[in-house]
Image 1 (tube, rainbow, N blue to C red):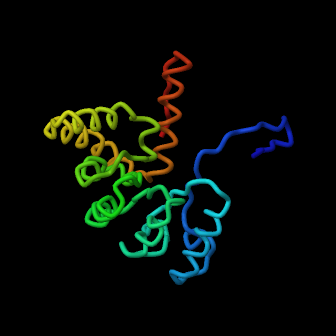
Image 2: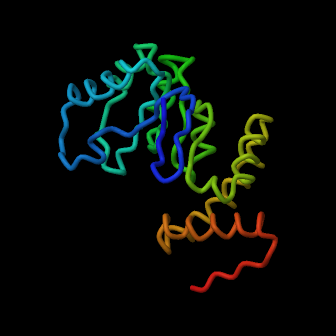
Image 3: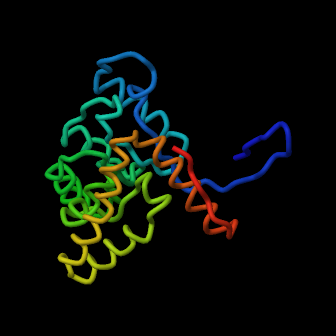
Length: 193
């Protein structure tokens, strides 16, 4: 597989799996049938790489049932789900259905809840600037120290709550830039609001 940047050069990269949102999130059409969504993902799986499916209804994705996800996970080409949902019952049922499937929790503010219900890990946008909090949550959880994990989740949630007030994506951008500049530039960074 080659990715081209016409201004610079071509790089060869190795791709291990494919992870993508459902076309219903981006194509403007509403109410895709499950058969249309299934065909979309199965066509992608035919490329020959393992596929992660996104469950992200809040971003405009199609509402798929637990049984719908089981149809994907019954095919070994589908190796997991990025579960950006507060439906932790579904997360647990998917893991129970196929224990070797990798289930990533998606909502940062519910990272610990996802781990408790069986998520293998988590992927979130706020990890870009507060990774240490989420690493601490996972370490405490894996060590069986739920109280410590909850304390770290609360710290992260305090920041997430502030982000929600200013706009999550713009706030994340400023925070990520600030963290990177502080870490790598070794100079004070001041953000004018």
